Amino acid sequence: MAEDVVAEIVASVLEVRATAGQQVDVGDTLFLLESMKMEIPVLAEESGTIADIKVKVGDVIQAGDTIAVYE
Image (cartoon, rainbow, N blue to C red):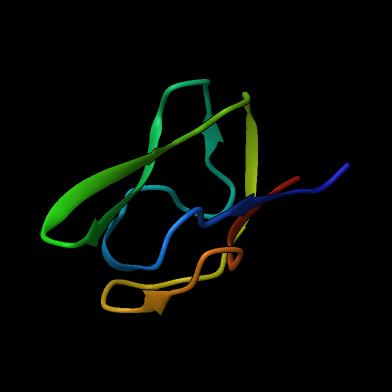
């Protein structure tokens, strides 16, 4: 069952650390975001395989945007 990873804040994407097809564990850093001059890591909340990455470095994302999808 696919599950979305959703942005919780408006931010810029500083780093994309996950790739499609990658197996991740709870607590792995998937992305590093920047908002209001603070760096915010997006951590995996569940173990699984990343099916798709929806953002790239430099993108500005909005709260509620899907940034990755688990398989």
